Image (cartoon, rainbow, N blue to C red; front, side, top):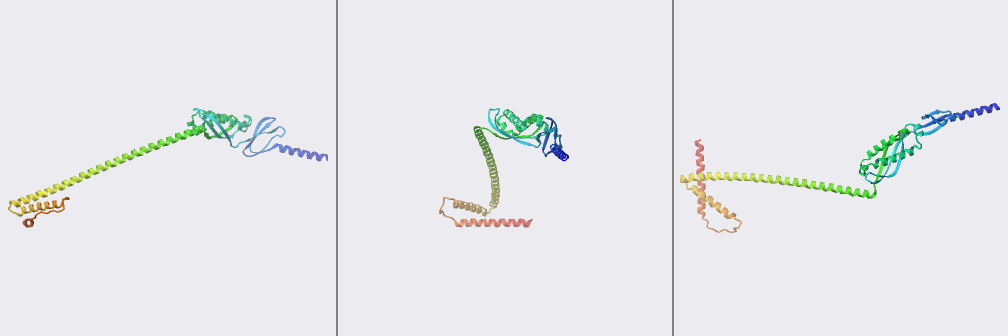
Length: 311
C-alpha cells in the first residue's frame, strides 16, 4: 500500500510538472518567459516547454495590428482658430520583449504621444492648411510618432485624422465666403458669355454687311452691263435708221415716231395718279407708223437674204 501511494503521488507530481512545463501559444500572440523574475526568451506560436519551478510566463503580447481611437481634442492653429480634431492610430508590435519591458501601458503611451503630436503639428499650421492638407498632416504625424515608438518595439503603420471641426461662427463665415466666391465666378462667366455673344453678333453683322455690299456691287455691275447693252442696241438701231433715212426710206422715220409714241402711251398709262385719260389719238397715223415698221422689217430681211446668197 505504501509503494502504491508513492507511485500515485509521483504520477500526480509528474502530471502537474508536465502541465506547468508545456505552454501552447496561439497564432498572433507571443509570450515572454521570465526566470526568477528576469526576462530570458520569447515563446512563439505553437507548443513550447519551460522549467516550471524556475520559469514562468511574464507577458502575453498581441502581435496583430491594433487600432486605437484618438479622442477629440481642441487645437489652436497658428492663426488663432480653435478647432476640434479626432483620429485613429494603427500600430503593430514587432518586438514582444521591448513592448513588454520598455514601456508601461503601451497603448496608453501611444495614445498620449499621438495626441501631443497632433497639437504640435496642427498648431504650426493655418486653418486653411488644416482643411486642405490633411494628407500632409497624416504624413508628418506618422513620421514623428513612429520614430518615437521605435524603442518600444512598435511600428506605427498609419495615422488618420478623421474629423476637423471649426467653430460654428467660423463655419458660417466660410460658407458666406464660398457663396460670394461662387457668385463672383458666376458673374465672371456670365460677363464672358455676354462678351462672346456681342463679338459673335458683331461678326455676324459685319459678314452680313459685307455680303450685302457685295450683292449691291454685283447688282450695280449687272445693271450697268444691261444699260451698256441697251445703249449699244439703241446705238445700232439709230445707226441703221440713220442709214435708212440717208437712203430716203421713210419707214425708218415712221419706226422712230411709232416707238416714241408707244413709249409715251405706256408712261401715261402706268402713272399711279392717273385714273382716266381722254386725249385725241390719230389712229391712222399710228397704224401707218406700224405699217412703216413692218416694211422696214421686210427690207431688212430681204437684205439679210441677199447677203446670205452672195456668200
